[in-house]
Length: 424
Ligand SMILES: *Cc1c(COP(=O)(O)O)cnc(C)c1O
Ligand SMILES: [Zn+2]
Image (cartoon, rainbow, N blue to C red):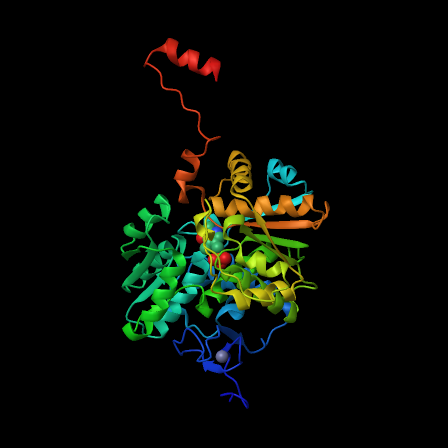
């Protein structure tokens, strides 16, 4: 039974499986049927041109939530959030970069990198977290928690600190890069290392969270998805709302896949864009259950034991599967894989261009190259690749790269240094 058949509030939550509806303020993480929830908004009383103009004007703000590259799209994200409840760093407004060496490596003519590593904690997770922690505060949560391969935890720890909420983090022991681990501790979260993988962490946390009255901030939280939609709104704004043919991005737990498809569908239905770009979700070959599902027309759900150097996407049982599937189907999207070798090769090209990114992010570039080679992406298609995290998130991946740093140690003499320079 629908709660709001007659007159709906501005925003509510609905189950993507059975359609059951919940109030916006209800801190539920799943429907009774086990389905994931999504946030829905009533139509907006403004023309597309009015909205686009407002988004741009707010970009000039010097104080308040509109400085944020999430909250300047407030009508599309969470219109009901009162300004004084919003927990914002600010975040978003990340650059859209072009580097000739990267473009030519992919075989494309038009490639832009949407660098989400420029967010305050160094990954796109901040976009979802500002909305998730704002919602936690509005729900009077006593504490927040997440399972994480590192970036979600680092982001949640930072925003929880800002909101003065206790933060609990479950991470797989040995599965988190040193940059992320240091960050999580530094922001003051309580860290619980689980002797298992990410999928174990999420399963256990989902089971205990309700009885402990803890607000769950994994990307199954539908408000995080709302914030992550703004990766797409930001890049569309930067392209003057002239959509590219493709948006390519790494896919692990599939929160982004869910968010990007929702963002595009809503932008299209609100008249902000004239056509839908196609989504290309890229998985690491050793952690590719969603790609396996895609190849079979999503006939069934796959689970694998995940292994890849790209720890941010080392996920074998992605939580947002159902929402992500809708995104791929509705955007005529594709899901493909790249090997760790291809990820590292792409990362070297991105790093040497002076841009830099963490390994999972380089999967976007490796995936764009693969799809171009296979002819799925045409040479003259306009492509935006999302770089999800900052280069310093995973220093180990750089220092341990067999084709990585060549270091010479020399005596502190002019001759030795001269020789080292002349011979390198
Ligand atoms: C979280 C994360 C991903 C994966 O995103 P999903 O939404 O889980 O698919 C990719 N790259 C980086 C750097 C991340 O932090
Ligand atoms: Zn349901």
